[in-house]
Image (cartoon, rainbow, N blue to C red; front, top):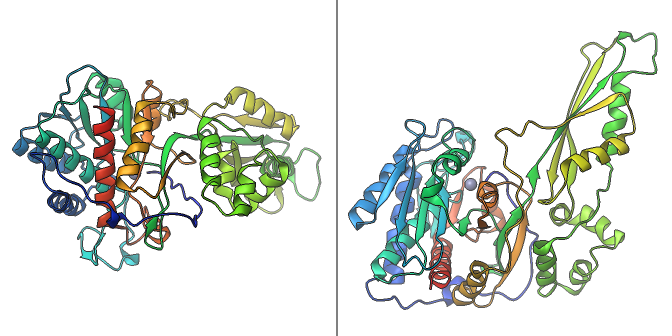
Length: 465
Ligand SMILES: [Zn+2]
């Protein structure tokens, strides 16, 4: 995923993954044999270098094609850009309900080898932990979805929904090979009612998982540029329309602006369920979200939670001047804005202009030609969300399921814009393991990849019953 949602540690009821045991259905591999097969897929996938740029995702697509071919599952390569194929496969249901899509991406981000202590494409396993670029993001879900397809196929049962598998190219850096094109050009091959994608939250703490966070929506990147214009001249002659002064004032006003608190279905449910498993002090905070004092505490101590409740406005880049004795005629700032899913952006920019209150400042909105589309959050009142709840009770009975809103962006936005209820989930990992995502020594605990796979399979079986 492009940005990580880091949830604050929770100290609550939880259970280790080992407590779960599954009785395989006829035709399926046993839980152990299935996990071993999946670990083999994951190892192979990590060893295929799909750093983006350039991606070369066809190498992964061809690997998966071979597996599906051996198992007799029909598939198709989608290759809008040579060498950058996505792969789509489908298990036919009885057609009485609409399809469910399992989505994961094939590419990975680059590596800074000097800071790795293991070979980034070696897939070395130590004490049940597999190391390598993509181990978390996103090749473990990819391997788990592949295994889920094989297990469902082996079961011989006809589900009420088609199950579509999509291994997607070019997620880490958008291009003509990515989701934008897939949705536009190949929609009939992936059209679905529900989708499972990366995102969400699930922290392992002291060997336990307290909650499975299902992302139902995400904030939209909608940053702007501020441009200040004034007269240039010699700095020995002070002027009132100095562009640097005006820009600095505008940036300070925006940077300290407390944008309004707004709860939606997801965040209301998130904080309410979280309160139920939190310390009394935290629970009190989560039950008084509209209190300005609570907001100050969240802003200071739990900025991730603060961000879930606000459209955030964060100055990040300043550009002005070239010589200390010359007043520049123009100065520019970049403001990162992450909008709540239902934010009315023209109205929000108009409000920003009022906060800045300076006619010499122009707000330049972003070019949204290839940007993630604005999309409402996916609903919690769906058979898919119910299936997540029920699957979690099977796989991790002492944890809870909570809906979360990601503050970063994923390709689920493209699906939501097409009317799909798309949900983000992830393999449980520790805080330290989380830092390896897009960082150094990326790694994943194999036992939690198995938990993730069983969770996905159980959820699909339930929603397509
Ligand atoms: Zn990812």
